[in-house]
Length: 189
Length: 189
Image (tube, rainbow over all chains, first blue to last red):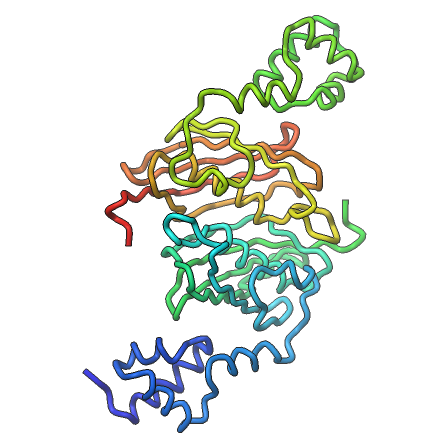
């Protein structure tokens, strides 16, 4: 059953707040209305369009990755708070999928999550010690993977436990717990 | 203390049997003798040299990977027994390491292990469901990673639990348990 315009716009505000990576197409499907209707809703509510929202986030004044060179992060960094949390975006392209099935190869999802977990650590050098991961559902060519990492436990000054959850259109596709430790420059071997 | 020649040759036979990827240099270090001594030992014992041993293994009559295109395996397949075991070799090159530390990036070790776990499954399509992994020690530029996978449990016709252990010069650097499932062609979504 279709909801009223008022109810739909209320849901729209909540949905975009919770997931700024939601597209108009996905929102239209959820609300059983046309994409045009969602666009009009957004205009009425003053919610910028997808590309603008991402650009806005990416330009945000977030922390700089210390533990990796920028090109060593797999995916695009969208947000980063040292020792707290981070978000990255990886669009699954031809080079990421199995040739026959067009399903993303697991190690790219792992690489996105792992490099994000390492990237949020406030240290010159950070390494993964262990990880417990789950591929919840296959990811296909063209899908956009939003990985969100947060520190869930600081086991000691040098050991952090980081949870990473990767979603496509709000649906979990990958999750993992990463044990990451930082090394100070003088501890390098 | 140096061991006798007889004892050394006995150890040599055992060591090469256990790890055909052992080099003369590594063996010389272990036995506290020169590389030349090990070479002479090998000749006396009729053990072929490193490159010959690898070539011999790679030419062996092992199973063909079904679940992946050959170029989708990360590393070089050395041995494969469907639904039982497999071995692959990955040499850590410049493109695999962090620019600053020259330590191999975790996702390459993961990719080697994960693609090997998938490769040994006798199916057109096999996917990783979950993994529990541990980076035991950092791997450096130039090191050769030998990953050995074996099926430790067949949970059902379609689910296999696979253990992967990756070693450098006989020392464990990475280990993981992978839960992999196979899909039949008609189950594809």
